[in-house]
Image (cartoon, rainbow, N blue to C red; front, side):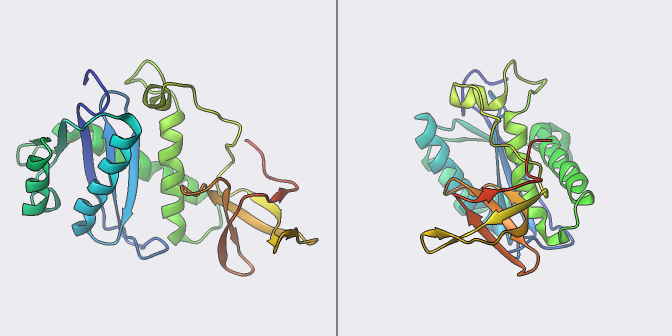
Length: 233
């Protein structure tokens, strides 16, 4: 176990999945901090996007924590061995920890995280009538839940170690649950309610992602009126 945040980060790419997620994403990449087990997941259209996602990750987490990544552990797949990836790690003083050929178990933290996420996504999708291409929303939801759930690997939740405070659970909702939503029309609430499905939380703004099956449309509602069928459990 690493002594501090970002001393060691585990990463692994998963895919291609047989059914692309909405947006054409067939892969995802995870980054897990060894000290806290706090994880990030990013959807990708191609494996070659791994380097770009890593730069996105490093910019966010180093700004959040005021710490620098010291080491990155991965397997020897080509996306981690590109010249631009290796040069970037060297230029930023990040130690590369590649597992030996044929030993994926040595990248166990990231491998297990990806398997856990896939198992949870399959379970979630089996209990809803949402299209299979919605697995990307389920994946991002499960990554969030793993961060706020107790872990055998660390004494507190990953969220608490990473952020230095307990997570709030009051905003949690059951993925795929029905919600009657009054949408904003201009600056006023529509008098009608629309039966939608909750599919996640947008990263960029407070609110919820909803799917309207009748319109086959996904939208974010920040001040929606949730009338029934939208509660924890």
